[in-house]
Length: 316
Ligand code: ATP
Image (cartoon, rainbow, N blue to C red):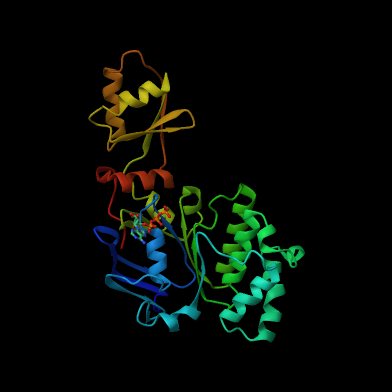
């Protein structure tokens, strides 16, 4: 097997008492679209900033293409592009001037810059905005320009920190189409997101919670790591039922999905049988039920809430 593009070995970062990233070990192969998922404050940005050599790890180590992310950070810098969460484009410069500026900062030769800029503008569909000031662009367009600037030195690896946050569905799709396009060209993509549907679009997903990596695998493997289907029931009235069903000893958790209640229970068939014999929730009408496959939101819930009784160990 070839050397992983990213190799993290117990990488850690503490801010005082807060362990923002806790012994994170991970391998990412070339060409992967790696989705890094976690709630606010889970440690995603800190991980990316360590990978980019912007924050010094307090423990463990990380390698990008075999080179240390901290002690060799100058050499590693040319190997990746980084689209930060709050990217500071130069608002008073035009779209093209921003690209020229970042090209210069990455020491891309002038002739090479002149060849790449039209290609990048076409890629992100900003050709008509070439002479517009960055400050006049919409949020979505600014994100796309930030992506183009991160690609100006033709890096084999791209880090994106919540690139679709705040984007409308059309721009969100456009951003993902671009990421597929880049992946297709062999670029490894490391992207953080809060959106579960975006996790489905990745080839590998990692869940982080309070600094700890809970699981990493393909979306399919993660969904198949449930050892049971999930029980969805229709009840009336719904909200009081949600509160009451959570109290049942055989129910680990309940969530609302499109008007139905989705139950996290290790043995849903037994639960149905027991409730058929005796339905303990007075004032609540049970109208129907079905068993459904887990989706990524269920995966995230199960791993972050620690519903181990429902999960099989992931294949190594
Ligand atoms: P979000 O989705 O909100 O961007 P995140 O997963 O990127 O969150 P981080 O920004 O990495 O999370 O933060 C992880 C933890 O580290 C949080 O508890 C945060 O408060 C803390 N933290 C991050 N940066 C610093 C800092 N410079 N000084 C002190 N604590 C910090």
